[in-house]
Image 1 (tube, rainbow, N blue to C red):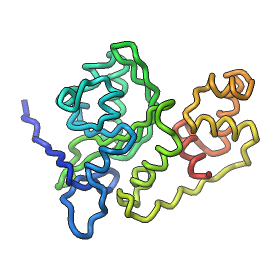
Image 2 (image 1 turned 90 degrees about the horizontal axis):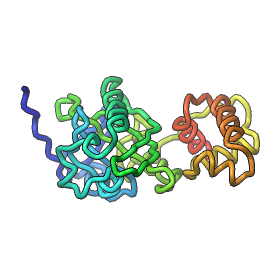
Image 3 (image 1 turned 180 degrees about the horizontal axis):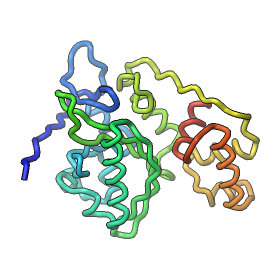
Length: 245
């Protein structure tokens, strides 16, 4: 068995964009001030994983969401230790898909923990490279829908540069230019309302109750909005809607 290379994630290291993913570098006078310490303070789930999904580091919100007792408890473990087999396997598969594609990807995810708690997530995952530009794992940001403020969280991820490959991570970097959204035709008032509440973290049932229509009708409006904005899923729809507004 090949011995895994030790990876140290020091708090003073800086996270920068590197090709289709990210890299940790030593700080310098010209570096943007986005340190690991700063990242770990964000009100999102932040995590660094090995290629097989084993935890190397994560912040407090992620520790709580995953069901670990502490950072020390999480290191060396994976979601297989705290989540159902099916749920953990799917989440780890998404990390593998990110590394195989060698590009930043967005996923709608569900985490069903063994203690009965379930979480709905919108996750942005990126390949993580070493100094020789070899993939050493996955860096991820996950938004817990219904807990984290979705629009604000997406803006924070966008400001980090993860949704815009040409940008360097860090609040000192120029704001990323929103991707041009081609709308085949304007969203109707109901379509706009449904997408807006989806972005705020409301579930389909909650949106339906709020505007007094059936959940099936809400899904219909969202499907129409996806077609108009050229989106394949709700994650892309949320990102596109936030870029427009």
